[in-house]
Amino acid sequence: MFNYKLSTILFALATVMPAAAQQAKDEIYANPRLSGSNHLVYPGPVQDRLTAAPKGYHPFYISHYGRHGSRYLIGRDEYDVPAAVLARADSLGKLTPLGRDVLRRVRLLRAEADGRLGELTPLGAEQHRQIARRMYERFPEVFRGSVTVDAKSTVVIRCILSMENELQELLRLNPDLIIKHDASEHDMYYMNQSDHALSARKTPRRALVAWNDFASRHVSRAALMSRLFADSEYVKYEVDTLDLGNRLFKLASNVQSSPLGSEMTLYDIFTKDELYNFWLADNASWYIGYGACALNGGTQPFSQRNLLRNIIHEADSCMTLERPGATLRFGHETMVLPLVCLLGINGYDLSTACLDSLESKGWINYKVFPMGANVQLVFYRRSATDGEVLLKVLLNENEARLPLPSDLAPYYRWNDFKEYYLRKLDGYGR
Image 1 (cartoon, one colour):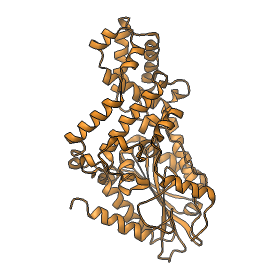
Image 2 (image 1 turned 120 degrees about the vertical axis):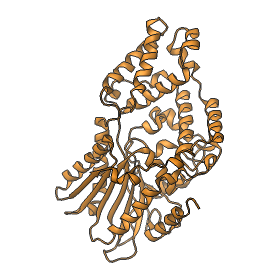
Image 3 (image 1 turned 30 degrees about the vertical axis):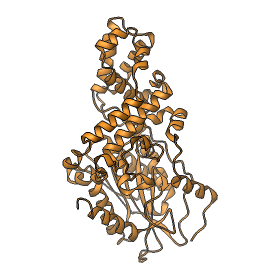
Image 4 (image 1 turned 180 degrees about the vertical axis):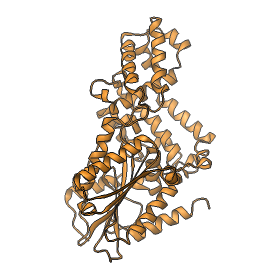
C-alpha cells in the first residue's frame, strides 16, 4: 500500500459518495453554461495533483479516446430556422424589443458559422493543445525520447483537426517523437461504430412515453415566448413554440464555443430555472439514448464494444514493447458517453427506469462529454519484463473509479481489468 495526501483522499471520496439531491441544479445556477450538456466548453481538470503510483511503478503507455473540441453547430437549420421565425415576426411588428435584439444576435451567429457548419472553432483547437500539454507534463516518461505516438481520427474534419492540434503540441514539446496519424473508413468500425439494430432499440414506446412525460413536467416555453413576442395570439397560431424554444436553447448553449462568445450571450433570455429544466430534459434524453437505461433494455453502451475491444487488444500488443508510447483516438461524444457507461466509470453504468432519479444518483451528462472530453487509460509497470501491470483511468483528466475490486485504487491491475471487461463483452447478446 502507499500513502495518500489528504487532498487526494478527499477527491477519491467525492467520486464515490452519492451526489446531492440537486447537485446539477446548484451547479447550473452558479454556472449556466453547464446546462448546455454536450455543448459545454472543456472545463479542464479539477484535480491538480494525481495520486502517486505504488512504489517502483512508472507510467509507460497511454491509451486514449477523445472527443473533438469546440465547434460550430452542425446543421444549417440550427441557425436558419430561428432567424427566419424571428425575422417573419419582426416584419409584422410582433417582436418585443428583446425579441428584436435576439434576432440581431442570431443573425450574427449565423453569419459567423456561414461555410463552417460543424467545424472546429479556434477555441476547440486550443483545448486540444492544452490537453496534449498536460498529458505530456503529467506523464513525461511515456513521451521521452523517440517513442511512437499512434493517432487515429474519424473521417470528420473537426476530429482530424483536433488530432492534429494535439500532435503538433506534442511535437513542439518533443521533436523526437515518431508520429503516426490517420483518418480512414478502414477504422470506423471501432472509431465510430454504426450498429443500426442496436440503435433501433433506443426509443421503444415505453421510453418515449416516459421521456415525454418527464419533459412535459419540467420544460415550459410559454414565459420565454412572452419575452420575445408582443402578440400572444400570433404565437398561438404562427409559432411552433416547442421547436423554437429548443433551437434557441441549443444556440444559447453553443455560443460558449463560438468566437463571438466573448462578446455576447443568449443565456440572458432564459431564467435559471428554465436553463436547469431544459438540461433535465436533455440529460434524460442522453441517458435513454446512450446510457444503460432500463426502459430500453440497458444495452446501448454496447455500441462501443468494438472500441473497448480495440483498446484492450492494442494495450496487450503495446505491452510487449519496451517503449510503447501512446495510442490516441479522436471522435465524438456519441462514443465517449457510451464508452464511459460501458466501462462503468464513476457509476455511469447506472441502470434505472426512473428518469426523475438521474440527478440524485449522479448521472449528470456534462461531467462526461463536454467539448474535448477524453478518457485516458494510463499504464504502469516496474520494468519492461514485469508481468504486473497497473492502470488508472482519467475522465477529462481527473482520476476516476471503475467497478473493479482494488486495494490500490485509483490504480487497478490490468489482468483484472481485462478479465472483467472481456467477460462483459463476451456476454453481450447471449
